[in-house]
Length: 242
Image (tube, rainbow, N blue to C red; front, side, top):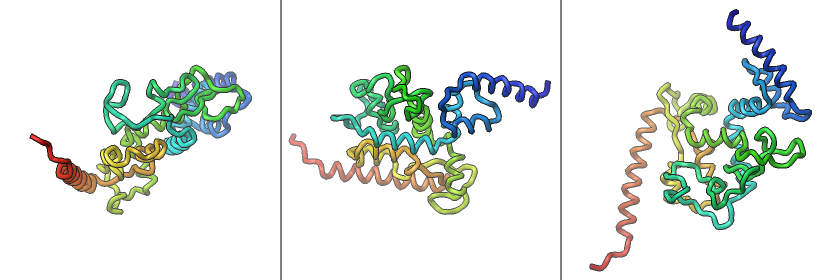
């Protein structure tokens, strides 16, 4: 049996399973995407997952919008290094992933909003939160995008019409993904900004593709800035008594 025949057979079987498991109400855009895929997902949950993985930028925007709806928990501040906290400032701040502020099953640990059936962000089925879920499917994809934006360089290249965001010239194959406002600067100078706004520094508003030589020059400028800032901080510190 040739590969194409195998694919058609498996897709017929998957479509049968999908139709059997499909609820009466289901997001039309997700179903349309599932039926247009080369390999048809056999279950609604896989259809939702495949939809958001194919729409990473949409997932990023939705996750940040849901976080803005929740806001930061009362008393939360962005901290790193302690037990149960991120080890580095390069990890996106996520208050609802901390044990102290977790809302428990049925609420997304990224954005803090209720998680519904199939990991969806709206209660289309009027059944309330899914108490067995702790992530929106969109937030899973958004988190992966924030944590490893270089894995999605093709999307950023396409958004920029394959032009370098730093020089305006053509993007080369060796182009790299850059945070326009470096994350060390976010941590050192902007960490008191409201939590939902902080996520913008990991999401699309702060990401861009630039050529390697432009990126190297920018990194050198950032290193000089950090040295100068440390020196200014040391000079302004009160003298210690011997």
